[in-house]
Length: 553
Image (cartoon, rainbow, N blue to C red; front, side, top):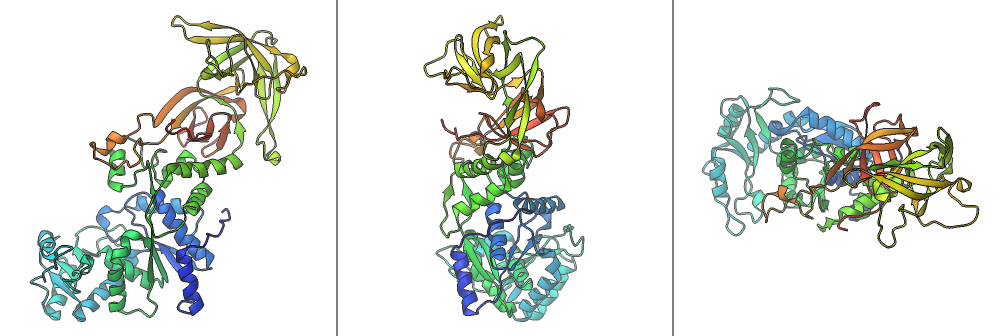
């Protein structure tokens, strides 16, 4: 596993530094607690980096805990996907736990609250509870069942657990304060009836704890010292602390909130992402246009680039929207430094060099990476017939067009100067073949007489090339806020050119044996990686990112 640079200091680390210095804490333990009800997205990457890097910085531990307290929405598929994403990012947990590991303990805590007179069984319907809850400006009303005796509450809760009552008929609620200005403190539900099989515990339980109850107790049970979470949980911190205090723990964890990652042009809502998948708008959760980590991995985003991106945006208490271009810039920086170079023609146009000997081929040696001579060189075949990009030839070019046109001379990368002499067209006037002559003395791309050419083209030898399918990916949405439905359904913000597929592409011959995950910089084209759909007989590549941002141009 690659070494990960320790994270920069931030306000969370300032708090930890102060508490370690004062002796309030003597160790650092964190956890990453996703619910296994979907695939992780770029927003989760920030939480992963903060949780794991914080523990790493202080020589502590970070556990992975799957919050599987809602079995109706969870699946083992998501558990394995979460593990794969964390490992891809370069982190390793100390232990893997499940919230369900603590169900017996959490149940005992519920019994303890009932015995203390701090919890009661309530028969109100969900709608009635909403009516009783009150508003931001008006206090709520006590449930008519709030004053049940401890004995009655214990009996009813045990009968709930035994499966005696149907779903939704009763809940267990904490007894706090229905007049609290913080609505989450108004006797929240802590257990509900759900006759659903659990992927970890099977049919052992038909009552399941709510997230706000099981989460702090799981933290405390694991001896987590710092419960790091996003700002939407700030309002729930008093409830978190209430449960910890009422149950009583010698080492209570401290919850610290940070701003979540909001990235423009991205959709992270699980409900809306699920619709994209089910409606076949995308090919799946790992579609390279999705903001999921598995989608970014498939597209060819390096894990290092994602970590660098999180490091650049920093950790703060203020919510903001980050520009997607910053993420793409981080991707370019890493790939530019590491990706081997190669040539590929996406929309091929045949060029015949008329004065080059028929049947002759030669080998041209070129560097794999201009900044890394230690990566060595590669050999590219050159012959009388080659392919260039269709866009690199024009019959009547505009001003400052330095590529190939009748009478103009260009340099073929690493090879020769060639001059356009004529061209052929089909019945529709489309150019099918360009005829050139070459200067034999210009081998290597330099003329001995010192004449200059302004255009340098990439090319692929027609006698030694590999056919490939190339998928040109772009942003999935045209709108900065894809969830905005002010002008109709969010699907109205889809970018119709988010995927363009080219099936007749040509790669240089040395790429015959490339495999899934291999990455390249194709000269003048961008960065590409080999897709999982690729086979030895049908190579498929994804464009990861263009060489330079062209969004909006």
